[in-house]
Length: 121
Image (cartoon, rainbow, N blue to C red; front, side, top):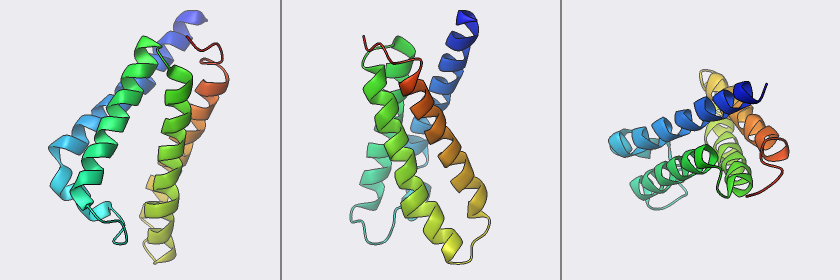
């Protein structure tokens, strides 16, 4: 069972590292997703990419992984509230899948914080 937990943790973590790298590779395209009321567009894409990579690495190497999981959940919920929900309320129902993806990933991060990461190292 422990091997399954480790495999799941590593897969989950690598996904965020890939998402983070994509933020650096596609920063110009992603800057349009930053809410218009937030100044600095592409700057926040880079910061988000860095945060995603840091969270993924932290979860893999299991250093400060509780904090990383909680902050990752907060970041993902901020995407739900500031990007996806306003898009849905504006009539873009295609954003529903992104909202559900980010909410699910945030829930998994909280699950990790409460279970896998409960003994901070």
